[in-house]
Image 1 (cartoon, rainbow, N blue to C red):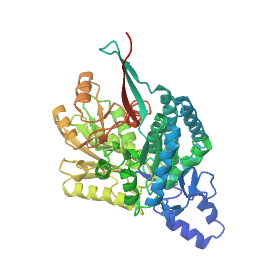
Image 2: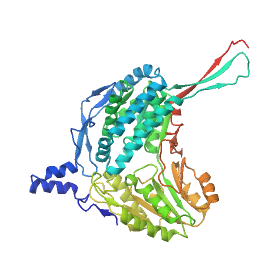
Image 3: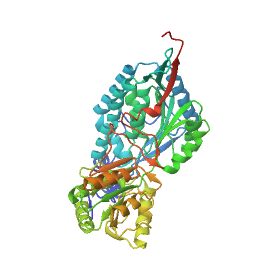
Image 4: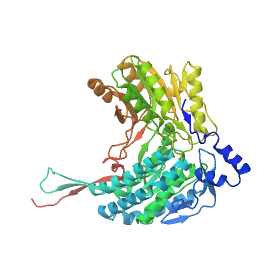
Length: 520
């Protein structure tokens, strides 16, 4: 079983702090510092950010550390009024921002990137405390997040149009690319910084302005980005942030998806929520960029290098405690190597995974974002066991939202864990016999974001790569994301692409200009 951090079990964090306060009045302060966020941190902002000003709402909502359940901060609970103010500010700012030269926008985005890099430790600590992921992963997210600002600062100067040969001698055909306008950016909690910059970097590079609604669980990272944007010199109204509670999310989302001044809605989250937002955006025929749910198959063929496949499985499944949209969700292992793969994977889980508070050195597995997330994993495990699956590792929920990394064998396709996305540290293994069988199982889903294939047979790799119904394929590799490559899915996994040279396209319109009356 995966180990607990020896100095402080995640199960014991809240009760230990309470006990220390009672028994050792002088000691808890030091312990509190380990498991608490510095409220005087320069990037810890708790107000909304609209039109270059920090604004307070009529009420606040708490942000909790998912590892301990303790309150980190209270953040302004913005509502429809603040959302409308932000849209109006973004629309006003768009009139001047779109006139800026590509080089000017590039310089400002690069300055923002530099500030993120300089403040990476502070940003990472915010992510760890509001999201729960281990500090080392949070540092990686900050680097990944900043890389989108760097990438799109360069792409800003490469928004090329076309001059198309005309069939008539007296006219010229010009295809111009122009920014679409105000962009509503609605982001999830699992990558509270990177999911913002991947969208905002592209939007600002294109000449658009944005209103960001971060997830209610993780608003602090978004507000820290606003602080650094201001320091970078991003003009007032170009980047706005309206944090809100779960209760106000529907009304704020409605403004951001229906206001006539908004030109595009960009959302990352569940397929179910994405469909709701698309319906709201449809009345005013807005552009939409949707990065929705995943259910990634991870196929290991008999020819695979087992060591490489196990490393890939560990990286793909247990990053951020299994809470990524490209996490492998269904592990399909061919009969010839099934037993060896499962045995070696179990050993790797024992050796490499340690549960604990994300700020504690050595932690590789933090909590899930909340108790609802943990309960979902428990439900999937219970369902699988009731249908004949065997728990080889883990399987138990611990205090709060901690969940033991879990390995299931004898999994079949009628089990809940093979039908819906888990978003947790559950690794179900399905045995298969033929390539055709594996592809049939892999493609039997209404979503198609990422898929993985492990094989050393080049012909097989090519066949499977083309046959997988996903927008992203990893061949003998479990970690895929990079700003240089496109990110997005097929089927009900979404619309459009983020990152890469294609990531800026959703924020641009193509205008055809027919320049006639020319003398040959």
